Length: 428
Ligand SMILES: Cc1ncc(COP(=O)(O)O)c(C=O)c1O
Image (cartoon, rainbow, N blue to C red):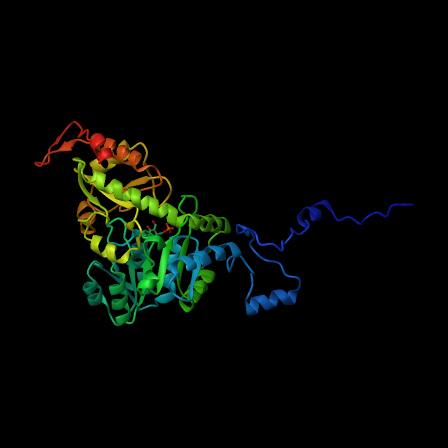
């Protein structure tokens, strides 16, 4: 019998027209990464239907199942006690922030935001949105009456940070929600530093909650992303802006960010507990002029944080960022960063490894000492993002670094020699 020869296609055709991968009937226990820029259809009519009717996956800039899996997970975490919460994922925290501003302001709109505002948001509001006729006032958010006084008939949005960095202000979310809604404005809360482990702003009346997922949600310093959760109609508007502007999260980052969520409570609780110990220990070091941490009873936001932040069986938690200001000027802060051996200088925060930033020359660069002071930040201030290392090691590292700083007496003159109090700080 003569074997029938199969009609073969060319080598290149065979290389790209590979057999279709199986679509399993069983659900994968971890979400697959849909690393595809588009989805294929069985017919032109099926393709056209989806373009016109929606209800499926079409194109990577529009929707991707891995990104949706991440957004849905955030909606579940932020919407524990609020019905109908939806979320949209974005390419970065700033893409998420910008989408909110683009979706809910128009030429002539006014926005009220905190004086102690994350610099990236300030830049978009004051630097970019102003070009399109959107004005903003930056006021003291520790006093809701001042926020009310800043409202205008054109105010469309009140923007707050649940727990701010680097000023570490705690926002009175229920009072601010009432002020915003009383003025006919939406209330959006950046909860990047607080995370849903400390509080869920939608439960306090916020219309939208925004995260830089790059920080605690992802939590491992290996992915960049942003997300906004809130009412379905508002989130629908955000999707429209995302699709139009193309601020889409990549599926690999979406996978990492979603995986990060699985350990969010474990990580954040432990980071907060370590931060509490760290703040209390360093506040006693003689080279330290101030420690800003809402967990310290003398912090201006302490009582409010106790009222608003979740009270677990072990008590309230206050976040994992601690701002330490050594005696002396900018040089003292820089010297502290350089003397640390465990905590490394880095942009960003919220990862598993402890990082530091001398604020005056990094996050708040370009502001002179007077401007820094106006924002509640001293020239020497160093922000510690507490990671998952053992608390004793972090305290020892910081105390030993502080020991190397010149001792400043009250006349302001520096003498060489260290406090050498690291042992006491560690045991304290
Ligand atoms: C409070 C806050 N909001 C938003 C952002 C912007 O996030 P991303 O860097 O992911 O764009 C940051 C970044 O540091 C932040 O600290």
